[in-house]
Image (cartoon, rainbow, N blue to C red; front, side, top):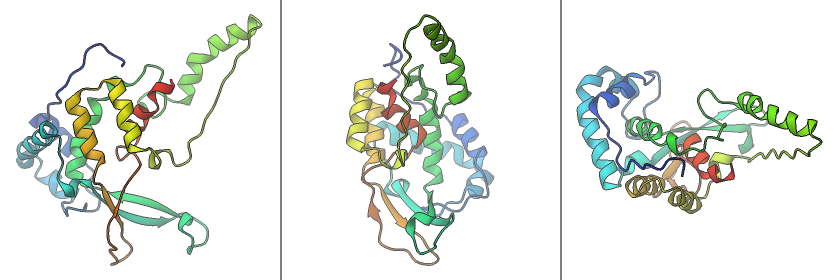
Amino acid sequence: MVGALIIEDILFGEKAILEEIKSLKGCKSPDPDEIPAKLLHRLARELAKPLSIMCQQSFDAGSLPSDWKTAHITPLHKSGIRALANSYKPVSFTSISCKVMERITKKETLNFFSYAQYGFRKVRSCATNLLYTMPSWTRAIDAKDTVNVAYVDFPKAFDSVPHQRLLHELRVMDIGEKRLTWIENFLAGRFQTVCAGRQRPRPTVIKSGAPQGLVLFNLFVDDCV
């Protein structure tokens, strides 16, 4: 764990919700619960309080509405033969209301990252990592010491994170029982359906992957650094 202090609760205040709603891009397509970002944006002040209450109750109860855990996948052709599935990039549309809650949860979870985490973090990158490590490597080489560096690439990293292993890592990090319970429910019972034209096949269960993308993946690999 990074810090000695654990803040168990996350407060989804009306002001914070309002700021997140206003930051939404109005051009986004409607999500699975058919609530477009443009509607939320236009009624931001009217919806901030009820959405604040809803998010707080969801976190306190450790449970999310089923519509908030459903994704519509739209395949976009990248290149290559159109008949091959790997020629397409999957674009996932999830509940925009839930995304508002996710953003606040994300901000309140960043402090659990190791200081050595440089990937997918604000004002950090491969370049800043090299700027930090190169001086120590140079000193070691000047002192005739050996410098060993391992670079590892995870193919389809976000899609391959096993949920139970991720939850184990979060328990080890001691992120707080209430936060852990909410994340566990956030990962459980997730469904996705591929939308192509008017076709809507039966939803399938999502058994792996990090829906919150960068944050959950960084937490998953945090003990590596």
